[in-house]
Every structure is written in C-alpha cells, then in structure tokens.
Amino acid sequence: MKAKRRVVPGAPKPQRTPTIRRVRPAIRPVGSKPVVPSSPGAPPSSAASASSSSSPAPSSPAPSSPVVDAIGGRPVSLEVDLGRGLVLANPVIAASGPFGYGVEVAELVDLARLGGLVTRGTTLKPRAGNAGPRTAEVAAGLLVGVGLQNPGIDAVLERYAPAWARWRVPVIVNLCGESSGDLVDIVRRLEGVPGVAGVELNLSCTNARGGGVAFGLDAEASRSLVSAVRRATDLPLIAKVTAAAADVRAVARACEEAGADAISAINTLPGLALAADRTGPALGSVYGGICGPALKPVALRVVFEVAQAVDVPVIGIGGVATIDDVLDLLAVGAAAVGVGVAAFADPMLPVRLADELADACRARGVGDVADLVGTAQPKRLSPPSTRGAEYAR
Amino acid sequence: MALEQEIGCAAGTCLGCVVDGAGGPVRVCREGPVFAAGELDWGTDR
Image (cartoon, rainbow over all chains, first blue to last red; front, side, top):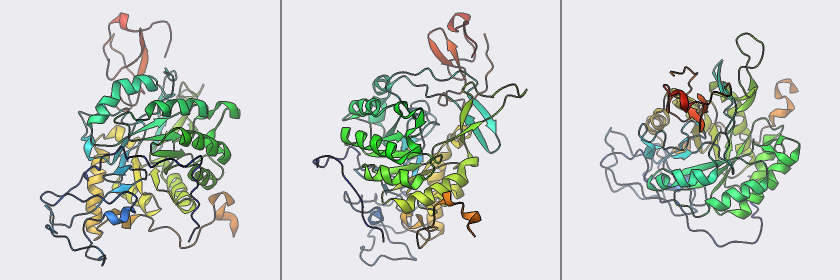
C-alpha cells in the first residue's frame, strides 16, 4: 500500500501525557461491562469489545460478560482514536458552529453522549461579526455569514473552559487567525488548560499576508501554518480543509506532513444569495458559507479523495442530517462524522445519530464501527476530481 | 421593544439573530426578543 510519510517537524519532543480521559462509549448497553479502552497508540480497530458474529476475530478472547445487550443485540464498539490521546466515545461529533461553546445547549442536549464537540470559530481578539442579515435560506441548505463573532480566546477560556473540564465529552476548540503568529499565540494559551481536548484549525480563514486568499486554497500556505501551530502545541491538532482548494488532496497531504493528527473535511463553501427585491445580496456580509444537505455530495467527494491521500483519520463534515448521511461519509473513509447546520433544526440530532449508528452496526452484524469505514473506497487510487472525470472519456 | 428577526437556531448558538445592543451585540432569541429601549443601540441599522 502507501508508503508511510509521517514527518514530525522540529526536534523530537517527549510524548505528551494524553489530556483526554478514556471516556466511556455513549452507547454502552445496559448491564454489559464497560468497553475496555485500547492501549494508547493501538489502532482503533483493536478496541472492539466483542467480536461480531459475522467476522469473529480469532485473536481476541471471547467476551466473558453478557454477549447480548439490553435491546437484544451484541455490544458494539464505537470508539474512534484520532491520535495523541484524543479518543472519541463514538464517531458522531458536533461540528463547529451549531453548538456554540457547548454551554448554550448544555441544558438541552446530553452532550456526554456525543463523540466530541467542536466549538464555534474563535480568534485571538474579540470580533463583533458581520452586519445582518446573517442567515439566508437556500435550496437544501442555509447560507451563513456570521463573521466569526466571538469574545476572543482569553474570554472564551475564562468563561467556558471550567465547564468543559467538568464534561465527559472532549471539547475541541476551533481556531481562526489571519496569520500563523495569531494562531501560535492562541494555541500557546490553550496548552495545559483543563477541558481543552484538542484544536481544530480552520484553514478557510483569510491569510493576511497571502493577498486575502484563504490558507486552505494552497498546499504550501497550509503546510507552513500547520507546522507553525504544530511546533507551538502538543495538543491533538485537526486541520479543517476546504473543498474550494483546487487540489484538496495536496492540501490534506501537506497538513499531514506538517504534523496534523487528523483532517476534517469540509468547511462551508462560499456562496451568494440575493435579497427578495434583487437590489443586492441577502446577507450583510455579501457572501456566506453554504451549509446543509447541498454540501453533501461535495463532502463525499472530498472525504473520498482525502482518505486516499493521507494516513491520518479523516472527520467527514457536510450535509449530515440522517443516519444514511453518517454511513455514507464513513463508507468513503471518514473515521468520524461532524453534524453541522442540521443541529439548528434539531439539537438532539447528533446524539440520536450516535444511537442510530450503534443500531446500524447491530443490524449489519458489525462489532466495531471501524468495519464500516472506507467500504466504498476504491481498490486502487482513483484520479483526482480536478481532471474532470466526467469528460475524460 | 419587541424585535423581529430571522432566527437560525433559537438556542443562542448560531448568532444569526444578533442586533446591536448598547453594550455590544445581543441575541434576539436569547437576550430578547423584548428589550428595554435603552438596551439597544439605535445608531446603526443591523
């Protein structure tokens, strides 16, 4: 298969003690023994608590505790290891945005049953955000132009990190910055803060030195940004790539080589909607990010390509609203799946999808969700989409 | 003042419904929808 091309930039550092407690799976069947976490560094597939009936693993010992759970199925291992000690209890995470900093919905949603929670985009300094209107409905989605309204990293940590530290769900802080200096400043403040399980780097933010073009459009700009952040922190580092890049595989590969522990794909895509009278744009910010089911085919394409290009786990995001969307993203190679704007309409959706994923595993006789990952991947590397595959013949 | 606004999440997370308050942006769904006139910034049009 592929050659291992993991490059660790800078001087070798001592392995950091994982910040994440091994959290119990959200969907542990009642009455069964807790799933024994895999040893650090072990591949996620080894975390299977019990072998499935269809594909028994000869090496794993037979489960000693009840093999039938409360609803009559076999226990299912949903754990996902994103690296550097960031272990999700299940593959369903709340993507950046819909749950804010978590505290806004903590009374509404049982956050402990999520695999992870990614905060809204946070910057070094406070930002007031864009003038309204900030949202516009479009076919199969929502156009959003909030403009990164946030109180700045210091206020965020002061107000919300104490709550995060009490929660069982790993909280991943989504970061935006206009320069690597900004982002390095931010991650230095995050280092060692209880409750911060990892960082997600939004590569779609504008590169101030790159002529106002987003980092994520260019592999080399992404590489230098990720490696600068990597040198500044030992936290699990996720790079969020954008489908707007001409060759997203090159960007993802550059992020991996620069030390990203995982890749999340994709962000919103820039779009435009018009005001009802067509005298101007619908949003105060003119452009907005397209969210929702409209994004799903794009997300499937990008995850399909990125999963072939890198060896690190991929978090698939884009248009997830049903369990079929989750299964589709897993099938093209996502190890975990982020739920975005659909959680506005139904805040309980991410937790329900985690439940439904366990059911889907049982229905398929699968003992470990890892067995559903990458089933639609090609046997050989497929050509990049940028060639215009539909016209190649 | 009872404000009307397009509301995305109605839970205070999406920041889609903010208007200018006297002390910074306020969410119509969470801090509002009913505000004292003095709580709002009347100088700009959001």
